[in-house]
Image (cartoon, rainbow, N blue to C red):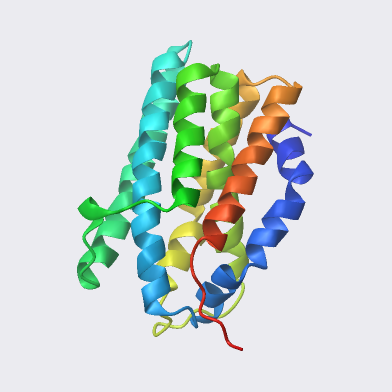
Length: 210
């Protein structure tokens, strides 16, 4: 088992929490109110801008040319994801340039940027990998259900279920295996990122059904 596989297995409890989360259930079944998804979309765009900066810092700190190339191409993948958000935002008249981040969003972005600025390349990979692996997992799990043309979140599900996104997640896991050591700070950093992912979903307000 590689280090990336070990870290994922150690945190499957948090992955399951994410999969079982009311926000993700709402996306799965197409019942999530548009206003909640719009809020999420704006928050995620803010997050992705910080995530892109963390990739840029990782590229700077990478000790070899192959790693620089890998991080550059992963950074390009973030821009492709942001393009999807911008397309959706345009259709729903959301201004992604005027996003006020929630506390949960700021907690995650501050953690990423602090790690990318102050820690070594192995811990940077440990902080960034959970986002990619968790979204690939969620997309693939949600895609097991029939997603019709009329499903309101079809594009979201298909984006993260796509083989191309899985390939990006695997590429980042390969960098984690290359640069990180099996030491407590790496395990702690990975789990903290997973906890912040679940907290990010929890910050999306789901109307009460009671």
